[in-house]
Amino acid sequence: MPAAVPTPIDRHSQPDAAGHFGPFGGVYVPETLMTALEELGAAYAAAKADPAYVAELSHHLKEFAGRPTELYFAERLTAHCGGAKIYFKREDLLHTGAHKINNALGQVLLALRMGKKRIIAETGAGQHGVATAAVCAKFGLQCVIYMGAVDMDRQSLNVFRMRLMGAEVRGVESGQKTLKDAVNEAMRDWVTNVRDTHYILGSALGAHPYPMMVRDFHRVIGQEAKAQLLAREGRLPDEIVACVGGGSNAIGVFFDFLEEPSVKLIGVEAGGRGIVRGEHAARFEGGKLGVLQGSKTYILQNPDGQIELTHSVSAGLDYAAIGPEHAYYRDIGRINYAYACDDEVMEVFQLVSRLEGIIPALESTHALVEGIKRAKVLPKDKLVLINLSGRGDKDVNQVAKMLGVTLK
Ligand SMILES: *Cc1c(COP(=O)(O)O)cnc(C)c1O
Image 1 (cartoon, rainbow, N blue to C red):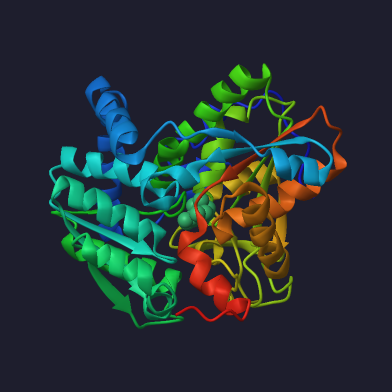
Image 2 (cartoon, rainbow, N blue to C red):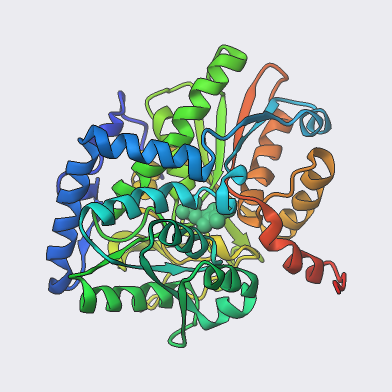
């Protein structure tokens, strides 16, 4: 059972200098990568303290990515639910279609500062690959994206988008041929080419300093939402709901509310076909403490420590480990976690499209499922903020197929 929330929470105390969020996180990598990670940590600390870097990043976040994103009152969905007022934070309006561009921009500017000429990244659904390909094109850097062969098949449109923007997409044929295997391949590349290559990791995962750095790049989501809600409603939300793959959009929207005890924070994992081994990706439902790809955290694994197969209707939530900062705040009871199953997601995807004229990403729809459940049982004077991490254009082919609709 999660312990009681210690008060007060000091959100800036995590992680410690060695990258630990309580007992989670850390740096579990081969010796050959230690120097690279230390160099990256030092470069990031210097950049963060440099007003020129901060100003350049916020310029590109505005001009290239489209920040600030809107806060949107979902009026018809609110009426449909009959309870709390529902607001969306519109990360789906960002360039390339999801929050991923916040982090890709932050890291590419860092790579330029470090004099790296070549960028590599992993991608699952392809959204992080597309964001990385876009920033590499913009800044004229060589770009190699690792993607599982199975994911390339499922997300062929995103593969084509990356190639249009000049990226080389390398199919990964090892393991399950999905995201985990793409990360392995990207790490192998980084070990070999570390001198001229920066690895833009796509979520709040992996070895320190990545979970901290990626979180920082997404903090802007919560900072904007806080100011926007205060301006619009004159107060903070009662609950904030976000989907959790690795955990970057969620920690980004939550971070500036961690020290506000009146605000409930809820992360939503992928329940897949239900909480049965191999049929879901809800790490807090049956996951155990372990180390995967550089970080100690909750992982879906079998009794021998082998990584379990995962499943979700949304490729972006389909990963066996959760970001270490989430593990920490779950353990101390500050953030609560729920899960949404594929069938609920399919229903709410269509409901929100119909009621609001907004087609959400299947990942974001997980947050909508939980947000709707909560809004329904809250009184009308309460506020629920749902982070709409991405748009669903990338998912319509898949949804059409699942609904038995043939597209020409
Ligand atoms: C990648 C992705 C996610 C999951 O990643 P997090 O790091 O957990 O945010 C969620 N939503 C969308 C739209 C994505 O593209």
